[in-house]
Image (cartoon, rainbow, N blue to C red; front, side, top):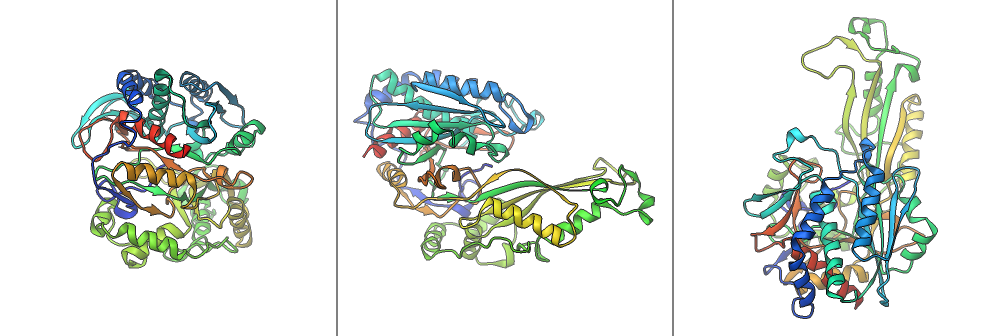
Length: 501
């Protein structure tokens, strides 16, 4: 469901700016942990090759590609990095992986990985998407280009490189680690609950100070995001067909017959029109769960975060001329953070090739995502949608839910978040907080009961192009505001020690 984090106007969108680096990255642990940095330097080539090899094995849940191989590769990566135990966790979908590293430390941190990646079309890429080729990107440096490079294999490989450094330097980790990995994040994590609720997994996570996902937090302008949550999501298809409706054709027929035959495609359009207001911007589903009002604390965060940024640059980055209702910039940002959405991802029906083809389609599909804010729940949103369609006379429209989960939220004073802020400040940065990402990730599995843990993202480094062609992760940086691969790995060393405190 990535992208997981806000991005700045200097990079792509000023909408979600959170902090400004006053200095080039300098890791606080440089003096104290010199042996670890030395090992990262010595193992640089091997660590980069590990990422390249991982990119060469794509696990794509939507295509049922390499799930078993991806899980086993993930398990081996964890064992090689020093985890004493790493087990495959079967689910009704793609398998998960659960691993533990016991360093004999007083505190344990939870870590969330995904081993799956998004689909790709090689024709759209400037270099082969599975090659992991190193190319020069002006303004960034040497980057590795490949599917999964930043979402999420690059940051995760940097995390593993940090563990290899501890192992090679014979230095004990200051924290224990309980890690889960899933292979269905890109299709809405439909079975992550089965992984987290496995007795041995739930027991291990319950002992942690929280769970974080490795990320690439740095923007080219030195901007770093510390987000306190993410919206939830429901992914589904609405299907109108002559078979289910009992009207219209059971196969595509000539369009001239529309004069006496009903159209499933028009039926879908009419059903979709009942879901939102006339302008498409307000949810009109009957008895739909309502979002709580935005808090004054979150409103203040937004005001502070957007102050140094250009609204014009944000509009240019998105390719838009207006915000909804022509709202002022701050109110538009507040809406982004606080409001649920019903979005049409795609409409598919009948002939979509070049030119025309005069058919009356027997079937039409709308691909929908519905974003949820804290205070709303996945099950309630799905139930309300189904009831609404039936009440409005569209009970024949199939609702095929393909994935999704609840929103997630963490308090700013959680030790997991405070440790992040401590590391960033020690690196010369002035981080601010953002209430929640407009995108989604399955942090609910940790923040919801029974675990009720803090959850978030952390990691230096930079990359972009998630879900898009030419996805990349910076390996050797020529930008003073961002770390390369070794610096990203060192940020996890710093974070381990901050969490231990």
